[in-house]
Image 1: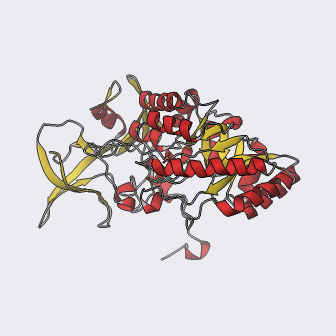
Image 2: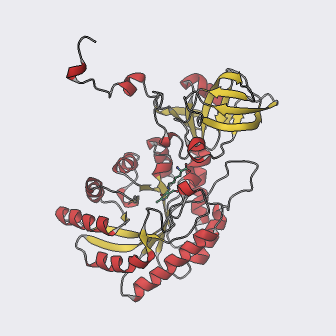
Image 3: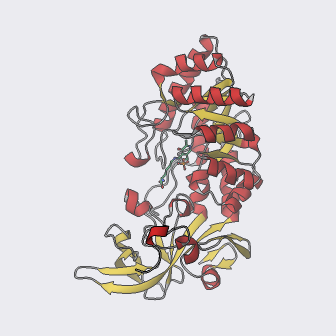
Length: 413
Ligand code: LLP
């Protein structure tokens, strides 16, 4: 198995396992495919959802490919700026922005803040006034549409915490237009992630279109609509493919015809998911009473998606022999849920072999933790036949060194 021109086994020799590996070529191609899919629209703006993969080197690749950044915390904003993404290409979303975060966004002069509620709107107005600045804002609408994806990553139903109910948007937009320090420029929505069906998106966009018309009829100005992210990607090679970016683009063109706004898009997974893998080594094979376990040196703390959502990641031998086996692939963490695959028909592997957990470039390293005092993994970026470690493996000193033993516990035991 190679990442571009570099053998994955050579990377493992160089950095040790486990590690994440990303492809510059694939990241760039995905950005291009998305741009081409939206080429028929009037000056679309694509902002990468940084939460999917916030590594600064990855963001830098995407910045070079012309993408902006959708951020949900001051930390993500700092990463985007560190990658060289101009403030004019940064959008701040998120359901719980603190005053300090709103001030930081205002001071950085970012493109747009997507406001999630009326209290946040008033807090932003105060902060903007105090700083003598004006914030361009969109109101995030909750269109009350079932995205048809996993409940844990659905965001557009009325009962979800995200956005402002359709019935309240008109009044709040009018209030925004009156508030000092606030310049309402449009509306935003994001109904969920890993969508395999365009119909709910089209329904949601239809509701946004009606809202644009209603806002304008009320004399309010609307110049941008942020359509969010959410397009699904293939994880399981046995399943049918999700809608292509081109099909998505054609739907958007149909659904938004005549809106007369700048459209914005916030793809995350689509750009980064299949541009990354998690490489791990088999620590031991174990014959349980009813099944064979492959125990990896990666665990749920490194890639939590299978444990958290019960979702599928393809697992392949880095140097396949051609043999097959049925096994349950687990990590060393002390939880039964620390499982990457259950009774999986997969490449035959044995102790010491390398495996790749596929489609791990989005919501992989970024969701990692240190449970069981396992250090955060290194990340490697490949570009042609060269590679670089773009995040160091966390050391045990770093991991333990933030703990403090108070005075009264020091001295003799
Ligand atoms: N915009 C907003 C406001 C979002 O909340 C999200 C994702 C995106 C854009 C990007 O969505 P994407 O294009 O990547 O689907 N941890 C979960 C996914 C959570 C997504 C959260 N929001 C997973 O591993 O499946």
